[in-house]
Length: 277
Image (cartoon, rainbow, N blue to C red; front, side, top):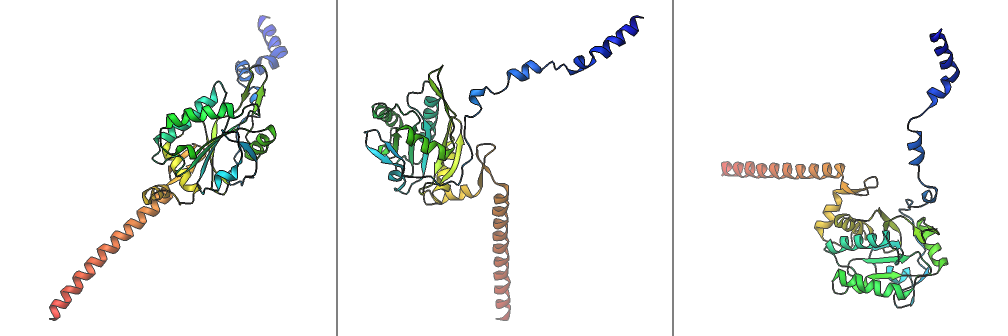
């Protein structure tokens, strides 16, 4: 009788018993918060940007992106805001750590532009910020390559929509919610590479600048190194390109084989000549 009653309970509540997920609470709690669902980057590699968007530089002068890209150098671009209490400071510090470790000099081989996404910011904030980073960077002539720009909401929207850089204002925390990353632009204003995160490896920066400049900057060794590496968007860095290495190995093998055959041909030719004589 007890067994029959037990089976009856199983039939009655079986659906509920077997539908229970012991991890349901964990799954529900680990969902991405709604306020973060539309925050981040999109892959706009290869997109040409409108260079006529007006911004203000650190002196309050109205400038456009074309003013900096006309110098014919690749550009590193960061969407940030200068009074950010957390992520932006880490991002800018990480960028400058990578730039300091790079053997190329800011302003000579490349430009760096940080654009504020906060329309309330102006040159009273960007000017001292630029001075602090130039002092930390510590290289002569870098002031011509570093630009901290502010602008109106219209200008900010025009730029971030082109980049598909998505962010939002958090009213409760009184700060912007945004992702961290940089865009590498060609001298013509085309997006060449995108790096997400805070830390930037000097090697990846150099390769990205080489690509963006179409090989117009850098030594032969730099260009040869880029030949052996390819950008992997899944790893967010440059990795050894196996096919290129096979091409290089094959070329070296053919060169060595050709040299070996040529040397032997010369020996045989000389021996034959001596025999005739």
